[in-house]
Length: 395
Image (tube, rainbow, N blue to C red; front, side, top):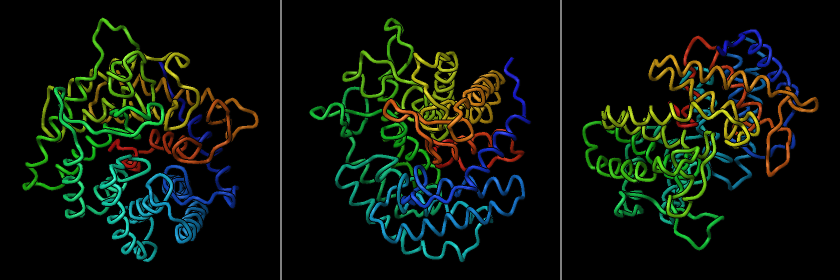
C-alpha cells in the first residue's frame, strides 16, 4: 500500500509557498509559463484559491505585472519562455475569475502577433511545443478557440507532414543527429504534442472538421508502428526518436520524453476518434509504464514535472481520473510519496533540487522546479479539478 498523508502534502505545499512568497525574482528576466515568471504566478494564484490567503493573490499579480514588463522588452514569444506563456496564464486565470478583464486587456493585440509568428514558424518547419509554433497553437486551442488560427495551423501542419509506409509523421531537427532527418516522438518537442493538438482542434471545430481525421489516424498509425517488438526486451515500449534512428535505446520515464507522452497522445486521439480499441491500447501502455519504478534505470533523477517524480505522479493521477482504474491510484500514490521522500537537500528549496546537465540546482519554475511540484501536490489534495495541467497537455 502507498497511502498518502495529506498533512505531509499540505505541509510541503506551505513550505514551497513560503519560499516562493519570500523570493523577489529580480534576477528572473523571463515572462514565460514553463521556465519563467508566469508559471510561478500561476502557482501563487491557485494556492490562494485553495487556501484563501490573499497575500498569494497579491504576489501572483505582482509577478504578472513583472511578466508584462519583461514581455515589453523581450523578443521571445514561446509558451515556455515568452509572451505566449504569459498570455496563456492570464487568459486561464481570467476564465476562472481569478483575474478580471482589466488585467488581460492588453493581450488582444498580442494574439494577432502570436498568430503571425506561428505562421512564420510553421513556414520554417519550426514545430516544437515548448519553444515554437505548436505551443502557440495549443494556446489558441485552449484559450482563444479562434477557428481561423486553428484551421490555418492544421493546413500548414498537413503540408509539412510526410507519409511513408508506417503512416504520417513530421521531420524535426535534432542536435544529437544533425545530419539525419528524424521524427521526435516526444511530448515536449515532438510528434506526440502534434497528435494532441490535432485531436483538440478536431473536437473544437465541430461539424466542419472531417478533413482532419485522416491526418490524426495516419499519425496514430505511425506512432504505434514505432513500438518495439516483444523480443527486443527493452524497459520502454517506444524510443525517444524514430525507431530506425533510436533503435538501441530505451526511453526514460517522464512527462517530456518516453512512453507516457506517447500513451497520452494516443489517449487524446482515441477520444477524438471515439476509438475504444485505441483507448485500451493507450491504457495498456500506461499499465506497462506503471511497472517501471527503478529511478536509476528509468532516468528519474529529481522531482520536477518535466522529467521527475511529480510529473509521473501527475500523469497517473490524471489517468485515474480519466478511467477510474483503481490500480492507477496505487501508482500515483507511489510517485507522490517518492516526491515527498526525495525532498532531502538541506540547501535545496523545500528540500528539492533540479538535475540540469549533471548538476543539481535550486529551481523555482513550473517546468522543472518547485512551482510545478507545488501545483502537482495541489492537484492531489484539491476538491475540484484545477485544469491548470492543460498547459502540460493533460486536460
